Image (cartoon, rainbow, N blue to C red; front, side, top):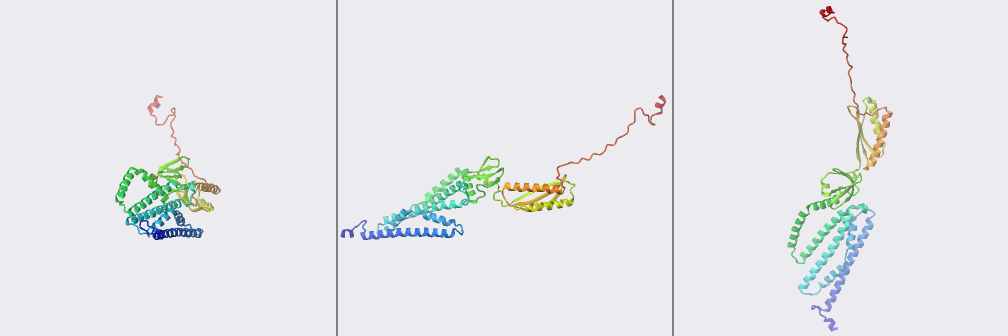
Length: 377
């Protein structure tokens, strides 16, 4: 008993070791209890709010807490218990540095899981998994993860007494050299990130960029691929794509349609008025169309020109063509009912009648012939 009571290790009695063990166990239990309470609170909050609103932050928090490592908690608790002992100053310093390293590792794990989950929810959360911008998501996750890891590493190194000034300077010089060497690739990379975050278009959108017309099929790290109407694949770099004006027809809430036609000059003013009224009635009868105007705009060289404008509450091109076809057929029927003929380019040629000049017969003499010729005959 005396030997046990006077047991020394580093000059510490057995009683102090027992206190350290108790502090270690309590610290570990408290850390585990706090983590479990936080997870339980997050799950309860999600179950209550999920029916009312979409809170992605709750899912991210739950995923981050699930990334807690019990063995890191245990090591941290052991170091807390060791702090209760009277240890040499150098050993206490090393234990404090070890605590900073453990905290940095656990923080890096939490941040890494948080970035992964947040980016999965942030980039196209409503799209089908096959349509997600996986390249952009992967790139952003990699860059953010790299930034987080470097920040945590530098923070840990600075807190354990290592001078990181030279290391940071070397990173800056190396980064400039890499940026200059990979300028084109990096410009496309950041253009891909810009597309993923700003979302001027997404996979499945029908866009027009300069002479490129097609549906977005894939958004990569360097290029974006379109599927044209004729079937071939169109590829353009992301940087060049963002330099041009992009027309996104998928996000068009309604389509403004303007079409013109002409009738013959023989159409009377009364029939023109009836025709414009009939056009308004036929467009208003279409549920997805909103009539704007129909006017007799000009007297052309070979026709009386009309201009009609309406809005189609659909972005689908096939719906637009079906609606325009219906309007054209009903317009033809209305013109036939009003006895109005469509004009076509014509030219009227006015020819003046030819005036014939009488010429004397060669055998017929005139009164103006000389008298000498009469005497000779």
